[in-house]
Amino acid sequence: MIKDKKLFGIFNILDVAIIIILMLMLVFVSSKIKTNRRTVTVSEKKETMVEFYVEDAPDFVKKHIKEGDIVKDALQNNILGKVTSVTYSDPIEWNSDSNGNSVAGRKAGYVSVKIQLSVNSPISPNGGITINSYTYYVNKSMEIRVGNVAFYAKLSDMQAKN
Image 1 (tube, rainbow, N blue to C red):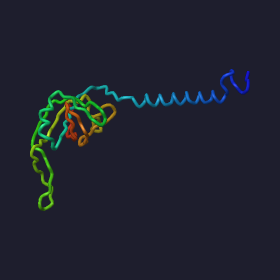
Image 2 (image 1 turned 135 degrees about the horizontal axis):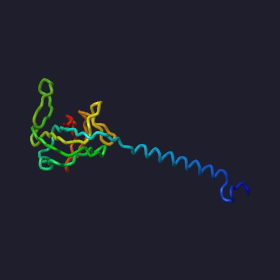
Image 3 (image 1 turned 180 degrees about the vertical axis):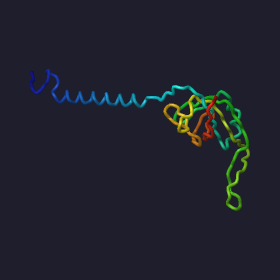
Image 4 (image 1 turned 90 degrees about the horizontal axis):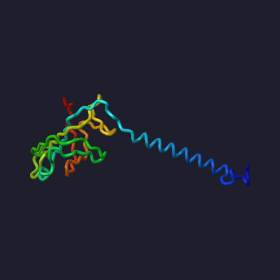
């Protein structure tokens, strides 16, 4: 049966062993990839009101953000929700006075922005909201994209909607 140390005339035993090891490695790697793609699903669909705050942004952003615009986390590539309201007010700029104390000031040509959105995720028992296996908490700083504007914003509030 074995001619010149060949199995079935084509493969030797070492060739068969290498093929089996490669197949086992392929099965292992594919099973790891499948488990990493698993997403967390929430049985209860509850909405949460989330608010982002930007201390100072140029005035011109006012004409680029509208209700209904999609809000996206730029780093995680998660769509967070849709804008329900946008509020503009005086910007906050922190400076030091003559005594070295931090005081809030105003910056010409800038506004502060509060963006409220509705998110399809309940607040978890640990106080965050989870979207595509990533959990967001109050005071989280991140780059968000709203409409065609990119901001470095803080998640300033989250409340469960009734």
